[in-house]
Length: 460
Image (cartoon, rainbow, N blue to C red; front, side, top):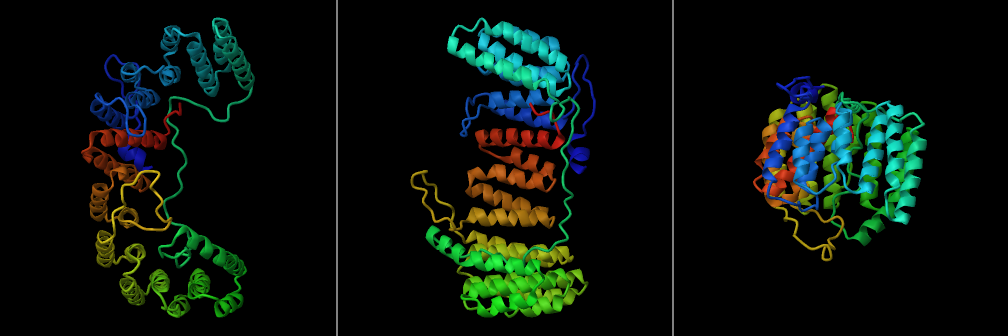
């Protein structure tokens, strides 16, 4: 897997005098950077405490001395460190740490947590030893009500430890299975079925109600490959957009059987009676162009892409829809090797996004924005995903910076976008570039957590 081979390089490298393997060197560097930056930060804006967070991540990755250092800055009981010491072979350290806890209920919870880890590691007999220790600890709990609850918890733990654990835990990384990034062979629906118009909540509900029965019938017809039935729906549609949905459904069937000529013929019959239908028609024509590319006719594809661009350009009243359609066109063009044209379409989307309003900063009580009103950050999200998808990294970096400049909450989403595209180096570079220190700390810790997930570090 690229992520493991180029970023994590999971390897057993022992430092002089150290007992723990250095399994995640680059992730360790991310946590260290966040820890250094957070020395004067007790709490982040999401109420998380960076010292505790860093301690948990260090522990999970097996950097036990660094976990202890991070936890020492907090008043938190380091349960994660106790569990990590068990996983990485330091049973004595765990027992010493538990013995140092002053309150019996804390010692008891630590003992049961460690028992759970040992059970998941396949060491049920040793796990039962910690349950036995918990039974001795509980007699020192002074509050009778709390003591009764803890006794119940101990017995529940003892019971489930008799079963086989659902999954086993070890220090050895076990990366989760990841789906092949190649696209599904099943083509997507040619248009956005909800449209792009700005609507109030009431209007959205009304349209959903009106279209629900229609779409149910359309999908039944598609499943049955019933073109005649779809033709009937198209002829009897009540509104222009319902007719558009029916036409797009027929096109969808034709695309599935690789009939670009007929798919294109239906796409161009979509009515242009309003801006929403024009955008839908642009999507449908673009979908036909993509089919032409798949059958090797680049000239017909270019004609469709150009027609789709012109239709999208005419839909200035719905800039978010415009930008989304241009991203779809850029994606189709790139897949056919039309790299320069794809770049032009992404640039067009970016220029449209610049004209969109910035999302207002409002309090939770005031945030009564209509559910489908669109802002610039939404367009940037679409463009960033599209640019990454077509491997236009320069454009993607530019959009990430533009998005970050207008929305300080965007950092996590941008990092996620890079990781979904298997570009961890880009995610790390972006996280390092964040100027606001608390936001940089939070983003780096979140990034380290996601990378540990992808690497298959033990889940504690």
